[in-house]
Image (cartoon, rainbow, N blue to C red):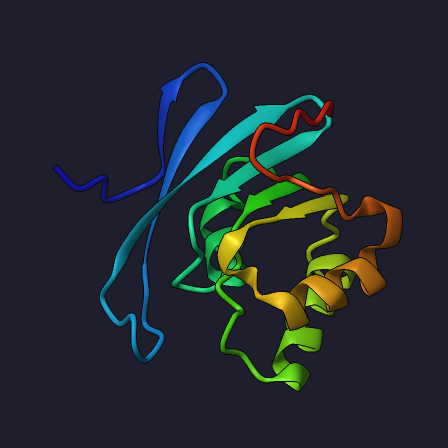
Length: 132
């Protein structure tokens, strides 16, 4: 069963479905999890095939403030100018407080995130605990 719209599955826990229109992943369905907290949304993204900004747009009805993004940003094959645009937009346009990038973000994007977010870039490796 495909979740077709953002759905609250438990108090403050939301499933956020998005369908990719990005070449190479077109029509790929992806569900992110949003946790609404008093400090903002914690967004857990799988691989962000549709684009993290498209996922954030779909999550906007849940909370207008983003505390943290966890997960892959699927920027591994993205060219440097677009990486810098996306990471800058996460900070400046989306006002993401912190970010914990995952596996498919890619080394150039990891470097840009560390540079742009500084101390607000969290290491989220296997077995790590992050207190928010």
